[in-house]
Structure formats: structure tokens, C-alpha cells
Image 1 (cartoon, rainbow, N blue to C red):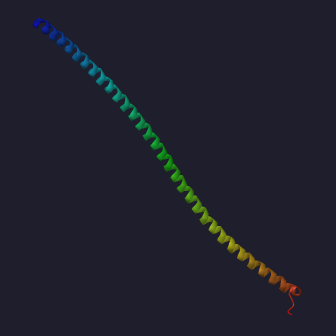
Image 2 (image 1 turned 90 degrees about the vertical axis):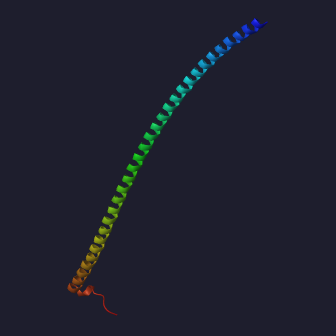
Image 3 (image 1 turned 30 degrees about the vertical axis):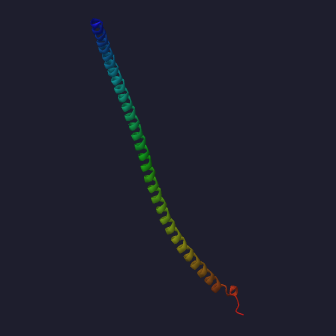
Length: 121
């Protein structure tokens, strides 16, 4: 009976060694697979980050261009307002000069032709 028990324990020991070997191999393969997955996802993540950064930079640049264009337009509009104001002043000045000329012309005509003067009541 004793020898049978020792043979059984020898068999169990062999099984235990086999199981340990299988477990080690399994753990190794699992670690390798997890490591591969980690690398894969890190790579994907860095790709996504790079794309997001590029997109952000492009949008930032586009926005900066829009801002500078808006500033330029604002300057052009401001300049146009100043020129319009100057033109309005000139126009007002010319209008008053023209009125003065008309009045002088009418007076001269009235002096040359007294009949056109309105008679006092």
C-alpha cells in the first residue's frame, strides 16, 4: 500500500509540474498579448492626439486669419468713415459757396434789371 501511495504522489507531482509549466506558459502568452494590446492602444492614442493637435492648430490658424481679416476690414471701414466725413464737409462747403454765388448772381441781375425786384407793399 505504501508504494502505491508514493507512486500516486509521484504522479501528482508530475501533474503539478505540468500544470505549473502550462500556467507559466499561459501567463507568459497573456502578458505578451496584453503588452501587444497596450502598445497598439498607445500607438492609436498618440495618432489620435497628433490628429487632434493638427486639427486644433489648423483651426487656431484659421481663427487668427479671420481675426486679422476682421481687423483689416475694421481699419478699411474706419478709413472710409473718415473719408466720407471729409467728403461731407467738402460738399457742405461747396454747397454754401454755391449758395453765395447764386445770391450774388441774383443781386447782380436785380441791379441790372430793377423790374425783377419785388415791389414793397
